[in-house]
Length: 250
Ligand code: LIP
Image (cartoon, rainbow, N blue to C red; front, side):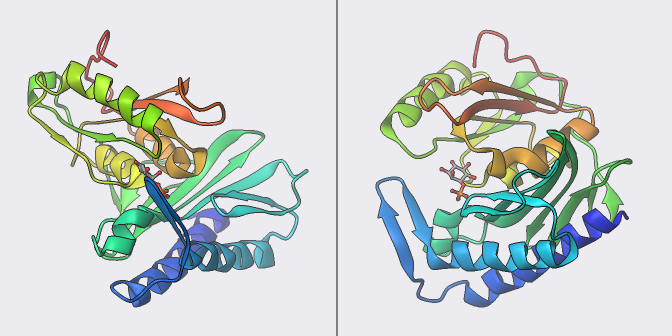
């Protein structure tokens, strides 16, 4: 395991332990938005991750959901989602994670996604297969939409919900089942290990998807990002096991 990935897993586990300790407690809410919630714990989790990374690589940059830190001129940037699935966490739904990726000169190199409730660590290093708890993973072989379980996220505003609904209507009747689980990072990790076959969302941020994208692509999966039709600095995402055809549907 590279020193960078080892650091990412250590930081993700520490942040995951913080989340697990606070799961089910009363939470300090920073912002209660129409379709989103921002918690003080989001910031605390990212602070912990930043500290761990910068004490090892003080010259690196950090770009996270809760802000930037470190040397923003650096070629090496850590992309952090301190709680992916914050609304799940707040409501006591045990489906959320910590997601940490690192990219150099804009190219994704390593990633770690830790689910503290399942105690599952998904990783991808500079080389080699993505893993779950150290064991290699790979996407499913399901090649027909009629066999596929597809997860969709509806993001955080009316426009993205409306756009997501249109996409949902296009494919919902064609697939075996659809799921809405509330964590983009875990959606990608689950496709990377064959638990799900595809994930679609209209408006998603890089910190939600960076680590999972690398894991999925490393295993031969596909991740298509498009400029979100509803929000300038977000992407639309269509991701799948590399065998499904969504042409004309999403
Ligand atoms: C969440 C994403 C999810 C999306 C939610 C939210 P957060 O990330 O993982 O896919 O539907 O709106 O953006 O905000 O909990 O880190």
